[in-house]
Image (cartoon, rainbow, N blue to C red; front, side, top):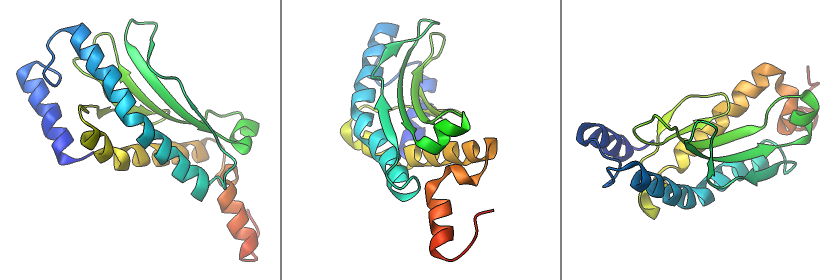
Length: 167
């Protein structure tokens, strides 16, 4: 997350707004727009992991904005791969959420916590790519701890390339 994003977040808290929106419907429209702006960066963050660590075996999905059971909104991007599915664990998840009782939206992973989501322009969306990469990488790290490193194809492929035996 950039310091600019944090400053937008803190200003929203100070001013009781989200961007320039005060009402819940207006904030939801900003959330919907933010998801559209973030979509290529979420895809890129997951594609980078797929290329570098999953060796192109991943399958990407995106839900678009949908209503949650509590009346909030969310959008979910996932990256699954054969070894993860065989291990019976969740995929890598990037999630934008705007909970029914929340002041403003957040980003999170499947296994990692909350980051403020204050994106209103294409430039601000681009600034979130490092955050999205960090969330996805942390999620993969935590998924490895749920099983073991062998769920990451690049780990065992590189071991074989170097004459090492995967443990």
